[in-house]
Length: 132
Image 1 (tube, rainbow, N blue to C red):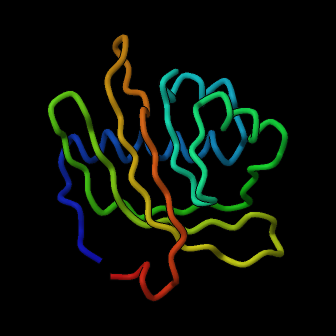
Image 2: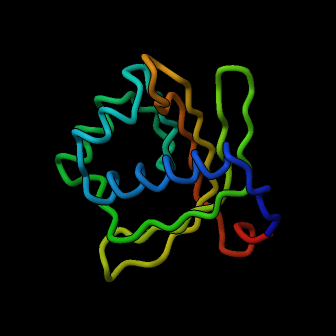
């Protein structure tokens, strides 16, 4: 796996992504509302497109519930007023279910003085294609 260059931007967004994962795992809707733009769009790994409210409803209902969520950030790029994060992730839904490998892209934009996720894409891969 290619290493991401350690820069202030990389450190800032690695911390932001870590906060996001912790809130997502805990299904902490209050924190996610702060981290996600009202205009968030998610192209989900179940081949559906959801807006922020739909994802929050799925989390609250327990339809989306992960017992573990690990990420390898491979790229952090600033493109004007956007920051794009790309990499690989591994999730486990219920503790007795298999490990799922995915590729992801998260796009963040500054809104009202805070970085908020505006776009997310994740797709399931095989373990061999998830590794570089």
